[in-house]
Figure 1: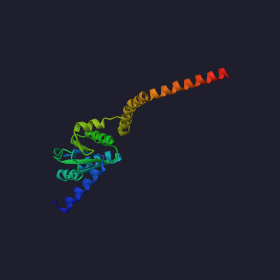
Figure 2 (figure 1 turned 135 degrees about the vertical axis):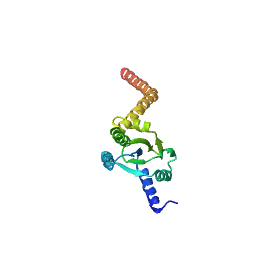
Figure 3 (figure 1 turned 60 degrees about the vertical axis):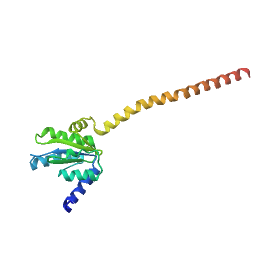
Figure 4 (figure 1 turned 180 degrees about the vertical axis):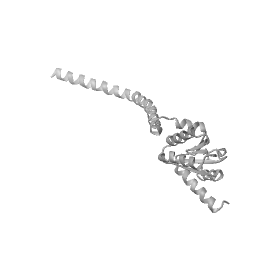
Length: 180
């Protein structure tokens, strides 16, 4: 049974995990307080909150949120979590940009949609140009083309029938005016 302080911390982490769109786990061992504050200030404009967390408490918070797709092996070593509340891509980009400027920070994993992501997947997510809106637009474009073609193919026979009927009506009207 966890102590009241640990239970409160688990509840806080569970709330942050539930509210965040992505939680990126990094190892910041060796960072000074000044460097940690620098990390926080660089990601804060993207509505990202950075917090050091105990692995056991973070694992229990993920379990409390019923995140069965999270690999329990990601909870090892010293862990700092970057909770991204708005844009998953912008959060991944901000964290990976900081990683490139710091030799002491290591990307461990991420939690996205109740599933864990490998460091490679997080870096791939960060490389999406234009961010989340651009990725959504590309998805809509990819879906819209085949749907438009399918609609045209299904509508063509009915449209052609209407053209034939309209031509026949005009032909009959023309015959009536000639006989009158």
